Image (cartoon, rainbow, N blue to C red):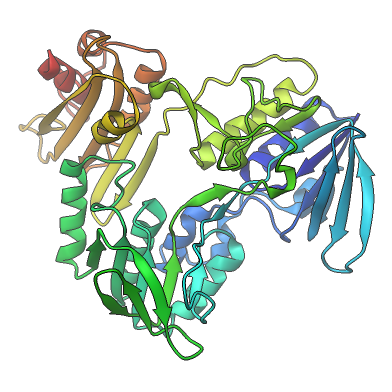
Length: 442
């Protein structure tokens, strides 16, 4: 069996490793535009702030390792076209410029995503950079050394983490977003207010509810102009969001309007023997019971693994996602899962309500204890839990992994209130924080 994998970051790496284990006699060929695989872009901010001293440590696999297992690893190769009817590909060697044809029995598309870059006036000035891959990481680290005024555009997780990293390196940091709040997709206002206060306290200039219009400068960027103001900049990092990198299959496979490939629960596309996984695909978003585009490394590695499991026969179903995620901002440990109250009200027909509970995570008779705030979002009609958030100076983010299971299994507020969790004074109170919040909802 001849298997071709196009693209090899998280989903592709997971697919290849599992395919080789399940089908050791198959011929597996990778085509990847970069000269590396498996780069954890979520660690770029850690490199900028020197928490991780070398960006090279953000790889968890390598072309050399895969090649040693007998996998044909074609780095710096771009697939130009795919003929699904005849199971053929046209491929260009980006080093030599030569093109060649290849064929497959099974095709795995792990094309990933690419940063959204609007056409700004002055967008081609020097020192305006993206934040996605290893090359971007090296560029950001190098250019930030001599930058005094850094502007980060986009206040999602990556933008927020970069703003913190640059502030820790004593830069003058401006964080711009068109939304009125940072991390608006992941957290409700009562949580983002706390995070915003932390940034403001440390001198980060939060420019929210403003849209970037253009960049100014002579060759190098020197100023960012929004619809309401202008801000000095030696370095601009664009973190506006991501879109599926699927131009290769445009008009050939069933996709969402944004280009995300539609797959079934076994990772199969609309073409026979063609599978897809990771950031180029839709995912089943369980709380809303609909397909959405949610690019996350956790989704990617699961989906890549499922491609291997289902390559020959549909064997293991994709269970969907709750979009669970976490972030650390200075001393604050924050995590969320499922729908926020605001997103639920704006994007679904659910009749949602919420409850917020604040308590110390363990008994006050212990030598130390820390306050934690938990929010639950639930459907008032069905009583099912559909989302949650937590914030504390103590790392209690694993509560959202637990709540992810609660949402996936469609548990009600009543069931969560009475769910059995252990008690030991070193770790918690007799009622878990999740119990406490659910009891309050009752």
